[in-house]
Image 1: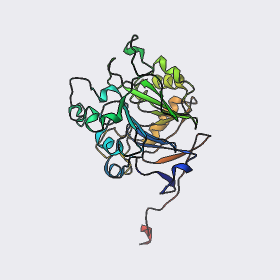
Image 2: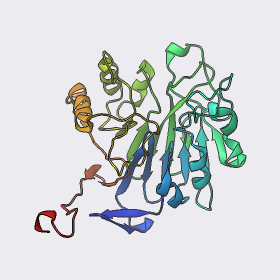
Image 3: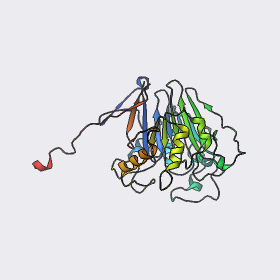
Image 4: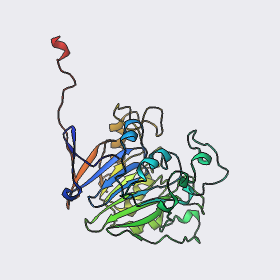
Length: 315
């Protein structure tokens, strides 16, 4: 979430917005994800540490926060990104402004009383609360929220879905469907969605890239993931919200989310559940991927490289 870059092997080279016919996607670890469309840059739940945080620059037009937990609404990161001439608005769920009471440090670093409302850290005129348009009926069938219509931001449109992390009927959490009209490409960030629900069928045929968190993973939960995919029918699914023991992982050791013991096995377990219903895209956290447009195909770039100057067996 720093300077505009294009991957060129192991080098990151600056690229001008005007040159960006393709789009660029990056998973930053946990639920943090960004998209650079060229004319508009967006980020979901930014959550940065160490050098990534130090180097972070305000390159985003819009930032979307799914809910108030510290690994999704991260004040230190937002202070770095929600400023400058380019930045326009931080969109949040109601909990980022009025967290559920009683306030408790449930996750150790989730100091709601200290960190919220988020207007302690971001100017109030740059923050806007959004409510879900598509609701989970298990939270109540008679609910309706003002300000839940599709949001028109010029070249992009925003539809908000109800997510589900520790929410209450009157304090919903959000997922966001962002559609770039001119480029005809869309990204659904589900937030910490725990269960599918019938209203998600309204997104069917609208989603190119579904940013998946943890729904349907665990013993006996696979039918939930299958139902989600069958309701929405996304073209691609990008698994996120896990950590590896890779040294390059953007989330430091000891921070949320948990590690997976075997990343390849984790991805293949999801692929087995999903089958041929969609295509799974195994992104590596911290790597920016170029997506060829209008085909919407990820360009998988890699190269061989040595980890030594002089091979140790020749010393």
